[in-house]
Length: 387
Image 1 (spheres, rainbow, N blue to C red):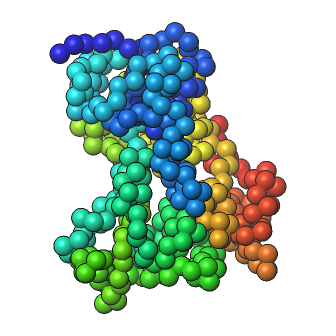
Image 2: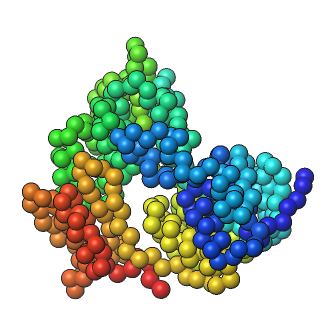
Image 3: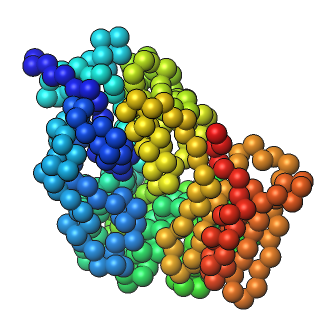
């Protein structure tokens, strides 16, 4: 097999990989750079996938730059349609479907995979998940002519897709074991308000239950839920969470937990191998959102360019794309055990502040018109991960 030498190899052409490459090129104009992509390598905004329908954006319109343009801008080699089968940390070598590559430094931007549900029934294979542009193209093709849509998963992505489907003229039913939407991020009072407001807009909620079987019936699908409820549907979208892609790192002997374990400089347990994005667990935190990825990419680019830099996470509120229920979430730190929520609401929305015993604001949630207070509250928050 042919061998190649690169100062830096990045596996992954998603937001993490391309943002890191851009930031690295700002600091190092001459280092040899290779990006390896298992898909077509186009640059697009992944967050746009969950609200493109109502915005009348086709999959093709979501492409911001073709791979040829990315090669030119980054002065990089980009290999598309390429799978990595092995990483040899000792030899600084990786094996791909297009041959072996020798690297100086390696960055794993492997992303995450939609969680697969243990569904029964003859139509279990009809369920689709969307986590990249390729899957979104399939989603749009199969959605054509469908009216009644079932969304499995009342979390952030599930609610965003459901709201987009609703606003584009579909009927939507949302199913999941949670007691209320976004239950991992919201206190009950906020979640219940979200559920009520979206129900008024047209959401059909089937919570505290799961889908057990999906079978084909006539021209559609028949869903059997865990409590015996039976639903008819034309199309089923699963948004049941993500599983970090860690198997390649595990096989190479790298330390993994929920994600690939990295320190404050995004370094793995193997010399000259780093990780960021949805596959990485940074100092014990797994944050699969845009702002953590952007901050990590900037810090890692400095380290790779010769200036070792510890990652600092500033306050990073998440703007949830549910336009029928505007929502901004800035979760409190996981170790903020002694704090409590202060919640007040009126006709303009709900404000929830998470405060500690000294009344220091550690996190907040804003809904509807209250989202206008985001910037003023962000100024009161401590860093999520400090220097």
